[in-house]
Every structure is written in C-alpha cells, then in structure tokens.
Image (cartoon, rainbow, N blue to C red; front, side, top):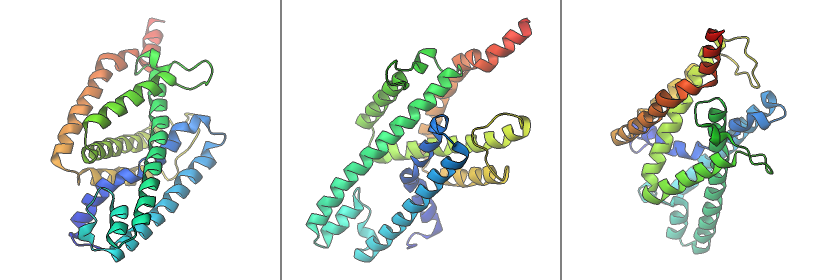
Length: 257
C-alpha cells in the first residue's frame, strides 16, 4: 500500500482530493435548509464517512485483484475487471462511472452558481449575475455562466490538468474559509449565523493545516496556473468588487451622513 513512501501518499491525496469535491456543495445551500445547524453537519459528515469507507474497500479489492502498477489508468476499476476476465463487469462499471460523474457535475453546477449569486448580491460581482428566474426562483444567469465556463474548460483541458487546478483552487478556498471563520468569530462574535462552527479556532486551524499540506504536494506547474487564475480574480476584486461591495457602499453612506 506504500510503494512510493509517505510522499507518494501525500501526492496521491492531493490528486484524489478531487473525489471529495462536492460534499462541500451542501454548504452552498445553507440558506435553503430548514435547520442548517443540525442538518448540514449530518449531511456532510455522513456522506463523507460512507464514501470514504467505500473508497477504502474498492482500493483494497483492486490491489488484491491486480498489481498496483496496473492501476495507473484513467478507469482503474473497469481496467482491473477487464484484466481478470470480467468483461461484463467492466462494461457495467463504466456505465456506472458515467452516471456518477454526471451526478457530480450536476451537484457542482448547483453549488458554484449560488456562490456567484451570493457574491453578486453582496456587490463583489456585477448585479446582473444575481438575477433570479421569475418562475423557478433560481439564479439562472449565474447558472448559465457557470455551465458555459465549465464546458469551455472541459473542451480544452485534459482531465489531469483540470483535476489539479480544481483541487488547488478548492483547497485554497477552504483555507480562506477556515481563516475567515476564526477571524470573524473573534472580530464579530455577535453576528447572526445560520450555522456555528464548533471548537473555534482549533477546527479552522486544523483545516488550514491539512489543506495547505495537500496544496504543497501538487506539481509546480499547477501552482503557476493557479497564480495566473488568482491574479485574474484579484483584478476583478480590486477594480470592481472593492468599490461596489455592500460594505463599501454602506461605509461611504455613513461617512456622507
């Protein structure tokens, strides 16, 4: 299980983190949850536990079926079944993989538009993004924008590059969220919260440590691409968001009064 040592484990963990992206999407619908303080932790933690157990069981079965050297394949489960002669099993798993990837895409395409919606509502992005559909009551403009961007990147990037970029961006976002939780708990303890993180600042600090260690395990080229993407986001923030945010508008209004 450790042919490349602990460094190999960390490198693999930084890549396989892609399989855990999506559980956090539950938190993006906190405003649509009846009791987020109770239901969100149950939904996130239980789904994480169940899927982690399944991942471990599948890895144990695969390494027992074929050599680990044969598993460096885009579809390792189907490939392993094919190698041991289960052609029908390989085909069945391939169909299931397509269905699984589709469901993950649907979840992610639900979560990201709501993040854009919240940012637009707070003035950090252009107001037209926060437009809600008159019939379905969903942020359809941010949904269309996200779908177009995902399709564009999927058409021009290989899955390995896309996974690494997705991982480093998500891990960095988790670091910021963890840091923000700790800072806001200290600077604004009276703020109304739909969900209250326990054991602050211990849990945020652990979150930052784990996420940062996985980021450091990613290749240098991924860091370069991430830096370019980050600069583009900072450009939008400093030339638009910082001036039009609700907080900045409120401060200017208070000063004028």
